[in-house]
Length: 91
Ligand SMILES: [Zn+2]
Image (cartoon, rainbow, N blue to C red; front, top):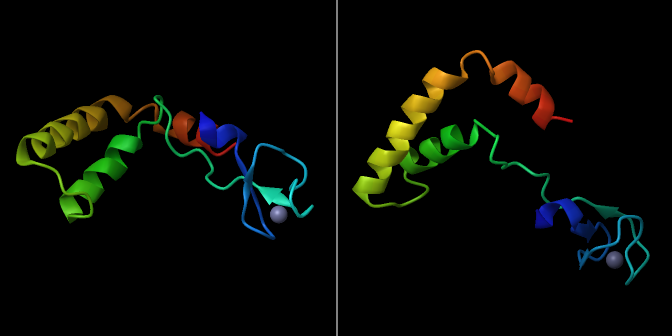
């Protein structure tokens, strides 16, 4: 994942691969996008569904239906695994 290695400088806002300091200005670097999506992330489908249903993500109706289907399926499958997933993704 590219997000896992990219850092952004807090001072000048440039992106770098360095993890300690900005190579341009020496400023502190931070992870610009904490990884939110992973193939194991069962909440991804929830967020996707919310975006689509709220109109933030315009998609054709057939895709919308598929996502809603997956959402319902995921809902059934995750009831017991949710706690574990949340703990792992917050580390
Ligand atoms: Zn910098």
